Image 1 (cartoon, one colour):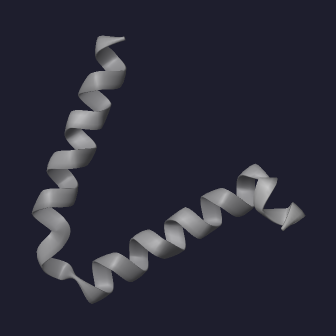
Image 2 (cartoon, rainbow, N blue to C red):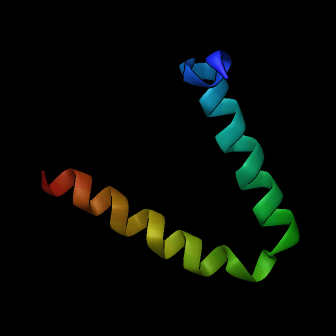
Image 3 (cartoon, helix red, strand yellow):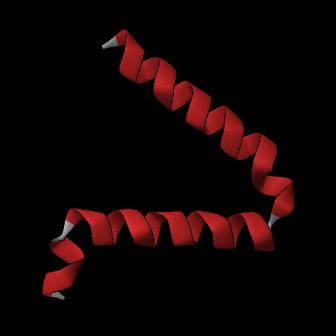
Length: 46
């Protein structure tokens, strides 16, 4: 599991999971957009 600590491997896994969720659950897109916008708003607030 040493390779899971490498940042670019984590990014590739995250992108792959995002694509998989978008493909399997297309109705989740509006909720995912809302969550991502609120997350970015929280980061900007800091």
